Amino acid sequence: MGLHSDLSLDSKSVQQRLESFIRQTLQRAGFHRAVLGLSGGIDSALVCYLAAAALGPENVLTVTMPYANSSPASIEDALAVIAQTGVRHQHVEITPFVEPLFAALPDMDRRRRGNAMARSRMIVLYDRSEAFQGLVLGTGNKTEILLGYSTLHGDSACALAPIGDLYKTQVRQLAAAMGIPESILAKAPSADLWPEQTDEGELGLSYAEADQILFGLFDQGLSPEAIVASGHDPQQVSRVQELVMRSGFKRCPVPIGRVGTCTVGIEITPEREAEIALSP
Image 1 (cartoon, rainbow, N blue to C red):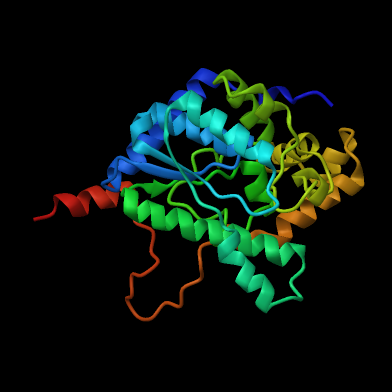
Image 2 (image 1 turned 90 degrees about the horizontal axis):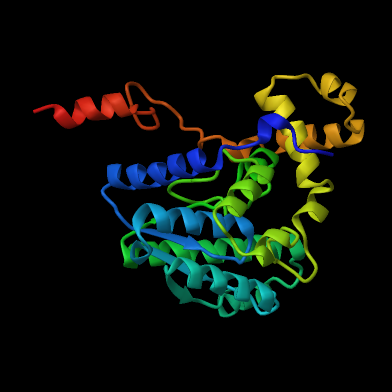
């Protein structure tokens, strides 16, 4: 299946926009530094390249956080990104954090263990965020967000999500344009939660097909029937629909019970924020 023409990027323009987004979002919050977890995968590598270009490599702290059975090749790829971008780096093993939990709860299956590892990594990142005085950058892409392929309070936790509006196939385009190592571009996407684990294996379909279906549903406003008529497998379209519907709670702000004139939870627009800042 070829890439849909409307999924093609003007890579240079998108790169500039995302670098500006990172700079301006941090500046508005009073920060000029950023922290991110570097897994050795394409998403975190791309965010690292963008952050280094936007803020200067000295203002970006990357953290590698392997578990005992994490792939050594992933660490090698992460170190290659660090070497190419010149960003700062710390290495924190999460095995000592999660093993006591696994021992206390021996009935934990692979999914529960994977969630615990993801949340342990976020504890490390937010601690480093405080120490480094930088905001945590998310590394999730639009495909993962729409399909719910993330752990709440784990890899989905962040202060800003630079590539959250890029489908996975677009991440690949921009990553290639920015010179990310071929070893990262070529390997199968994986959260590296257990040996031989792959994202596409867990999702039950390829990112390429998922992106085409999601683009049709959300960007073109097509019905599922129209997407099937365009040549997509009905079971794959239903699978995407199911994943989107089941994961809706992950994309919504936490519901807040309103009492009287309480303003907690009301979104403040940038324009209103500026008015408040100018008030005497």
